[in-house]
Each structure stands twice: as C-alpha cells, then as structure tokens.
Image (cartoon, rainbow over all chains, first blue to last red; front, side, top):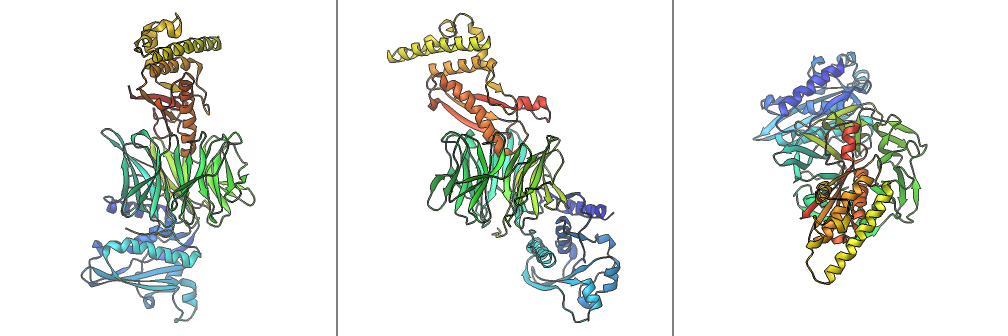
Length: 443
Length: 165
C-alpha cells in the first residue's frame, strides 16, 4: 500500500522533470522495513510555491530510496506545521512515525531565498518537556532556486547521518555510459548525473564504444576507456572543464582503470607484454610499473581502502576468481572460493566485504557480497543478467548494470538487500555505472 | 583427416612463403602470388573462385569459453595471410568479441585472446606484426542482439578488418 503510493508520487515527479533527466529512479523491490519518518511539505513565503523545486519532496524520495527509511506518503499527511510549536506530536505518533521533518522557505530578495528545516523526534519531544531541542535545526541563506535540489540532497544527507549514524550519499553523483541510436550507428556518451539521475551532463562522446568510468577519489576526474578509431586507450576527463587527457594507448588492451585512495596512482590493465596484466601508472611522475605476472588474464583492479593492496579478477586458477596482491610484496592471495565465476571486485570502505559479479549454479549473473572474514556469500540480485557493480561512497548501496530484454538499465541495491531501485534511461540504453566518492567538486 | 589437411596446407604455404621472399629479394613484382595463383599456394585442390571465397570470409566463430580457431577456419585465415604477404602495405585489424554474459572487462580480455588466436595464425604464416593490430571489444559490439545460444554463438567471434586494402 505504502509502496504503491510512493511509486505514484515518484511517477509524478518524473513527469514534471522529464525534460532534464537522462535517467530516472523507480523502486523495483520493496523495502518492508525502515525507519518511519514524515517529511512535511515546506512552507513557502513570498514566492509562488509551484515555481520552486519542492525540497521536501526531493528529501522524501531520497530517504525512501535509501532503503533505511519509510517515508509517509504525502497523501497520508493531514497536518502541515512548519514551526516546532505548531507540531501536534500525538498526531504524528498516531501515524506511526518516529521522526518529523518540517521546513520553511522565505524569499529574501530578488532570486535569493533562505531555507530553514528541523528534524524532530516524535517520541522524545512528545513525552519530554516542551523545551527539548530538535535533533537538527539549520538555516541556509542566500540560496538560489537552481540550488534547491542540491540543498535538498544536502538536507537528506544531514538527516540520514543524524538518524542512521552513517554519511548519506544523496549529494554524490554517478557516471555511466549512455548509448543512443544515431544515423551512423550508436552514439556513446560518458555522462555524469546526480545520484537520483537528475542534472545529466555529457563529458565525452564517441561513435566508438566507451567503457569503465572510474572516479578519482577527490571527485574531480573520471578515468575511462575509449575505442576511438578502433584503438583502445585510457583517458582522464576533468569533470568540471571536460578537458580530456590520454593516459595510455599501448598496442593491445588498455582497460579497467582504477584510482588509488591518494589520487596519485591509476591501476590499469595492459597486454603490451603478452597477457593482460595489472600495471600501476604514477600520475605525478608519469611512470609505469607492472604489478602482476604470469600468462593468465589479470584484470579489473580495485584498490583496497587502505591503499596497500589491489584486488583483481584472474583466471590463473582456470576460472575467473578474485585475488588480492599486496603492493609492497607483490604477494598474491585468492579471496573467492564459491562458484566458478567471480569477477569485477570492489571492497567496502570498512575493508570487510567484497562486492562482485557472481555466476550462480543457475548460470545467472548476480551481484554478490562476500564477507572477507568468514567467506560467507550473499546474493543481492537474482534477476536476468547483471554486471558492473559499483559501491556507493558509504558502502551501503551498489549500483550496477542490468539487462532487461533488449534494454540495458541501471539498478541499485542496498547491501542489506532491503531496497532495489531501477534507473532506466528515458531513451536508449545506459550501462557501466560508477558511483562517485563523497568529496565532490560540483560544477 | 582435418589435421592431415592442415599439415599439408602448412607445407604448401611455407613453400609459397619461401618463393615469395626469394622473389622479394630479387626485386621482382609480387603479382605471381595473387588470388588467381592457386597452384603454388594450395596445391591443386583450390580454384581461384574457392580462394576468393576464402578471402570473403572474415568472421571466425569460437566455442563457449574457447580461444581455439576452428579447423574449418584456418584455410580462410591462411588465405588472408597470403594476401597480406603479397601486399606488404596492407594492414588488418583483428577484432575480438564475446557474448553478452559476464563481466565487461573480463570479456574484453577474453575477446583479445580470440583476436590474438587469429593474429597468431597470420603471424605463424609469416605476416609481420606491423601489418596487424588487435582490438578487443569484449561484449560491447554484438553482431546479433539476443539472449539465447544462437545469438551468443554468433557473437563469440574474431573479425579480420582491412584498414589498408
């Protein structure tokens, strides 16, 4: 019931913003639990509400899509307080919510607004004394309407962190490859967008395939693979200026770039010396060092969060499995033992879990998470063909590619499996996603 | 049977190559070993038309998880080797492809193994490396769209593309 209502709200939201968005968000698997929260529509003073981005709605969608919250559908809300003394706590308690968000937007001058919001704990504030302070109360001044969405995501991040205790990812961005049919074949575009699919911005376009976008840890650059003129190369594009520099274009493979946490080294895969091997490119000193040896395929490097090792896919044991190589010793250790196809690894920020592509006994490719301590494996997706898992900065969600019939869409799933989201393209296909880090420089 | 045929072809081609290089050293024209000249290259079994057909074939399919060139494809790849040897300015790009299943980047590596297998046959016949480039698209450029074995088997392939005819 609640999910259905939430869906219709999201649909409406999509209709309104259809012009801007390259991809959109849709809940595809229900969150049955989650912290119940109500986000009251913000009061607007001195301006026409309908002409402004609805901050409360963006917050509601953010929290709902996170899987950690169950936001009261707007249709179920009958009271609209915007100041703490107007809040009838027993009413909110009767709705079963634990927290309420209220807000107020005021036009100050010209195109400048101030935005105020408060996060209230229903139980504590009802039973406690009237003087008990809100969990959060913040004011933002000098805000332009075009900044409303970004501010809304920021508010979602603040609420998320306050109530869940982990940093929110609503202000992060995603990169992906969009494929549109053109008159002379497909048009491939490396695009970045807000994590909810809004504000898409093209960064690099080609009639040849594009692959493997990877964000630099400072969020300023994206490394990716292009095949311009049928030659593979690894490139870095500046997210703000769009300036592109070529990093490697050796004969053979140039693929799968991945950044070290200190932003200085790019792990890449080259086959210039024979088999596909992992190399480290020192971006400051422009030096190339080979990290792995042998005649096997080694690919899909990913730095561990401490920066001391690289996990990668290798068929050195016959079938693709995940291995780890220590940078200091070059000692290699196998990490996966369940199933005969594990690939495209990434490690959660706490270093405790491995997220990867796993082929099950049924032959289907799923996104899976494995405890590095116990080796226990859990499948997060069980439908059709999935690929290219990419972890969110807080390690709570995974973005991935999903084939649905002849359509390629993006999906996201929480690591606890509680929420599943689809992010289809409005037109054409989207694939090969990469979730940005926290540290972002917004354009 | 096929093995014997292959061995015979190899010998025949080697003879052709020796002849070719001798001729090169002598500074003579290279037309003697063109498409129509079936006798010295293949023995007496192939007509000019048959050789033309072999050159028309440029896509070679592979089994699942396999990088072995199929026996029935070697003859066609030999024909391309001969053509490249006879026209040293020609350049080919060998493209490797996989089906849609599995990890994108791992598939690029698998696709390269297929392209490399075909390139190896060319080089084994003496085609200089400078005339061959390799690119693997993995699963990114399927020949056929579809999610069944018939589509997959058509997509597991290596393709010879002439960049300079």
